[in-house]
Image (cartoon, rainbow, N blue to C red; front, side, top):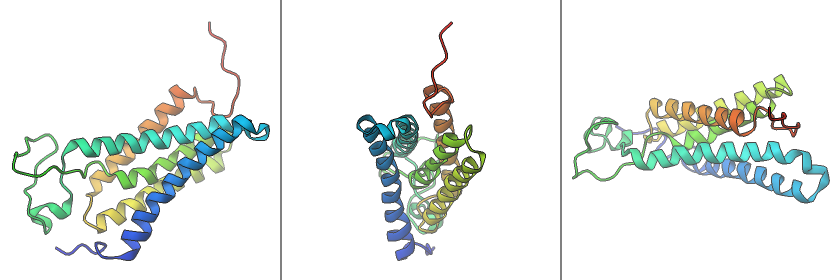
Length: 192
C-alpha cells in the first residue's frame, strides 16, 4: 500500500512540521502574553485568559503525547494489512515481546490542532461569534492535521477521534474547575 501523503512536501514539511511549530507558537504567545501582563499594566487583564489558553493547550497536547508513548499501538503504515510487516495488536491485547515499541495512539499531531478549541471556552461567555469561530478553528485545524497524518499512514481516523475527545475533555475540565468559568478576571465568588 502506498500512502499518498508519505512523500509530499505539503503533508510532511508544511502541514506536519509547520503545523507543529505553529501550535507551539500559539502556546508560547499565550505564555508571553501572560508574562507581559505581570509587568505591563495595559495587559494585566489578559493574564487570566492567556494562562487558560496556555494551560489548556499544554495539558491537552501533553496528555495525548504521554498516552501515545505508553499505549504501544502501531501506526497503520507499520501493519501487515497496510504495507507494513507487523501484526495488528489491539489496544488492550497482550503485545508480543518480539515486536518493537510503537507510539501511534492517540494522535498527537491532530491533538495540537484540536487544542485550539480552548478559544471556544475562552470566548463562550463573552462573545458567541468569537466562541463559534474558536470552535471552528480548533475542529477544522485538528481535522486537517488528522487527515494529513492519515494520508501519511501515521494514524487511523479513530486515533484522531480519541484525540479530539481527550482535548475537549481536558479543555472543558480546565475551564470549569481551574478557572471556574471565568477567564477574564472577574472576582471570585465569596466562600460560604
